[in-house]
Image (cartoon, rainbow, N blue to C red; front, top):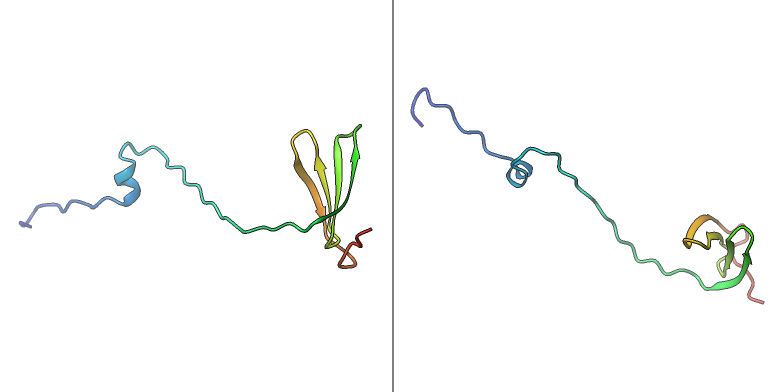
Length: 84
């Protein structure tokens, strides 16, 4: 490099990919292996569109039936739910 010359700044990876300087959206995903416990019993409330699920490990789950999304999961107090 000659005296008096300015050194070119190297680009970062984000700048090299996104040359127009618009914001980059980065998404991070985590994948986990999930094996749910067997279902011991279920109850459906057609008026509210709610399904209650009792698992064999004692966990209780509440689900919305129109979208099948979980409302809440309550952990077991005793450890297991007896199969009848």
